Amino acid sequence: MVTTRTVDGVKVDVRHSPSFAVARVGLDPGEQFRGESGTMMATSAGVEVKASTQGGVMKGLKRSFLGGESLFITTYTAPDAGGWVDVAHHLAGDIIAVGVSAAEPMSITKGCWLASSVGVDLDTTWGGFKNLFGGEGGFLVHATGVGTVLLACYGALDTLTLGGGDAVTIDSGHVVAFGPTVRSELRKVTGGVVQMLKSGEGLVFDFTGPGWVMMQSRNPSALEAWIRQVAPGQTGGASSGMLGNLFGD
Image (cartoon, rainbow, N blue to C red; front, side, top):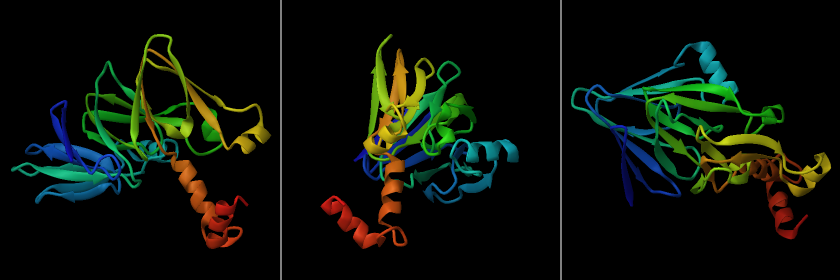
């Protein structure tokens, strides 16, 4: 199944959705598109591929260490005949194309920006105190300008539309992006460190409408924690860790 969308003049075909999505971006002659380093799967003949820090080394370092994205951004430039580029996320999940404008910027959480038009500017903004603990949240990638953004998620994608005064609480690891009119606040979901460890929950975002919020059905940090638990070299090793999970140890 292939889903085709044209956003701000950019044609995007998403196939293998929602589990192992790949996005094909159509490029007019000489048109450019930018992507996260390492996301390219294939290009048509003649497409130029060039990596740079986009905005200088300091901006690249800020985006990398604070926003969770790569230091380098890859720019794809179509030849005179036009072309296409296929991009995919490193985690199994879906991809969606959305538009950004001066009136509709968006905030994107760590690791969910996949690619965007050259008219979209990416900067890192402060999103809350989660960065003090590591993991999700903290600094967000703020997308402004005019163009198309490809967002990638781990698992399936859900979009919530909140009316004025409507509120929702979402685990920070499940948030993909949210619009400019939504108010957000980051807090601990439980009353203390012991309760946090017992419940397995960390920090959550409280969102208040009006506006939209995108969520992913899986949490990348939970996958990372599970891999560390069952990996060789950890307590009990891989096999005993898996058996321990099965028998509740």
